[in-house]
Amino acid sequence: MDILNICQTKIHVVKKMIEATVITLWIFFAVYATWYFTSAKHYAPLTASDARILWKIHKQTAKCSSRRWREIRRGRKIVGFACECGYKYMQKRPIATSTPQQTTTQSPTVIYQKLHRA
Ligand SMILES: [Zn+2]
Image 1 (tube, protein in one colour):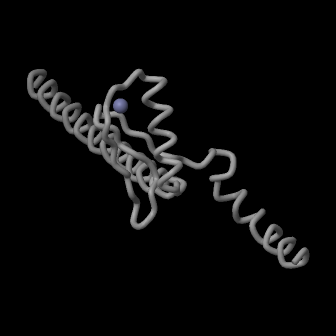
Image 2 (cartoon, rainbow, N blue to C red; image 1 turned 135 degrees about the horizontal axis):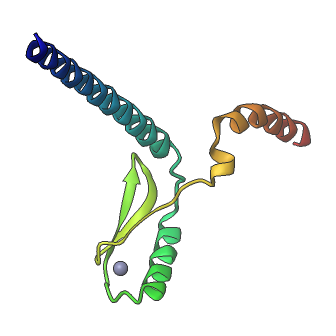
């Protein structure tokens, strides 16, 4: 009887462990997915000349001797650059202005002010 009981509790523990692992994986996946989608939204567009200037700054700061770079695009917009050396730069909006709460509460008043000033 004792052996049987031990076996059953072991199976129980294994089942619990599998459940816990599955839940953890789902949480991890959910967090990763939200991070991925929210961070992708927060890329700020750059002009080609901005990207070029930033690349030159990278060359100076990193003492990089690469001569080529390419634009990183999100749709039609340039959001960063990739240097020949493997360095990548992505322009992101400041965290303070990218929070949805601020944009939803501030943008209507900003539009209102703009309309009434013009
Ligand atoms: Zn470089």
